[in-house]
Image (tube, rainbow, N blue to C red):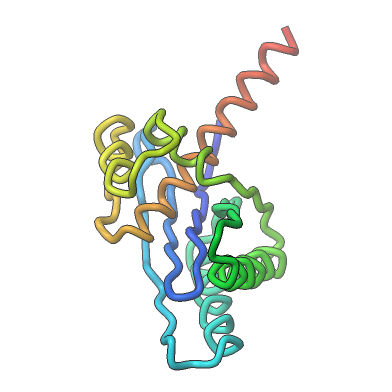
Length: 170
């Protein structure tokens, strides 16, 4: 179904969660994770550059087959959402530079894939990845755990698409 690994990304301006999710002995496992923080004292372009470089380094080091990122949701705080949108832009640029396919998932999709509940909290998502899905190495850091959930969501969607293709071809 899926050979290789997925880089999951939880975008943000202050911190970005990164997680590589692959398969070990047939089960998904977190091979690597990191939370990238950018200093609020730096100008936004410098912070965006740090994010771009961190994502590019993760891609070069781990050679994922795809990048999955949580889609920006516009709420009441449009200033914060604009920063997340800009961070997402440099994440997408790093993926494009590497020739990686990208898939975006809404927060609701990620939570549903991990927990079956659309309004699950960060800790519920982290626990569900480890307990319900048996994923080894789920990070304790919230942003990195969210990135692992995004990657898991992508793997789930790949599995569903493969099953649909199989059913159609019969």
